[in-house]
Length: 350
Image (tube, rainbow, N blue to C red):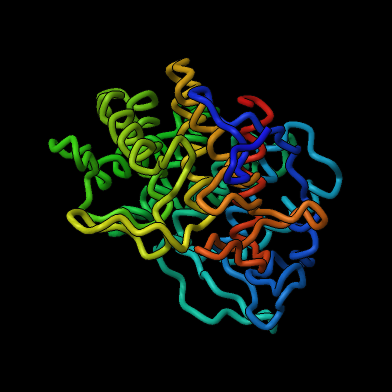
């Protein structure tokens, strides 16, 4: 049933939309024997833009989350792990950009890509069903976990990897120290209920910051109070709802005290919120967080500001952004990975 606007009908318990299972077909289309290409024109890979550690790391996250991976998904996980170990230097930093000519275009550093690499490696070390992948991923994670980034977002992504490792290896000292430092770098919620966020601006992958604070409260003795992370996530979820549907902060961000912009919305925001809500749901048992997951799934399926699907069922690819006029029909790596990650949660929480 639809409303007069054409949007799927929602209720207080979330969108009533049937979620498909995650497809890895387009991810395979974007990958070769080296890694995962960053960009596509519609569904066709654009090799001239090369690869980036950011996306390869996210690829390792979603392939490692599959409880019963196919041979193709395991092949992708092996490829992405090999890319990340090649990108890492002896000091634990990572290159980010590799050209199609297989030459690095940068020097190793500790930006977001370092954090996401540790997130991917930590997820593989904790969840991969292949023992040899878990072992190699833990070696590379441990090397990178000795470093620290000055950027809170990079620390947040690294903290997500540390939380994954600690769930499987509770005595891993480097992961414990990294998660503690990540939560400290992020900080706690503000005192003003109208802006319960540690920063003066919402930028990108915002929910990852709240998720790390939530995880640190449970996995580290003496960590931040659980309520700090839940308050952050509750506020973030609430300010991103419009008439009961998800309307995430767009690519340009939103600064405190300014008018809230609506476009262009990015799939990465939706996936980060789904991840954080899944963590909160698992820890608290509060069905409100399950509703958040369903709203994230609904955003991809058409319960969004424009009332249009944000993925292509024919290819399995996710569209690159939601504009006032509809989706950006390019199906790059980041958006496709965000779609897969969100649909993975739908299997448990829908």
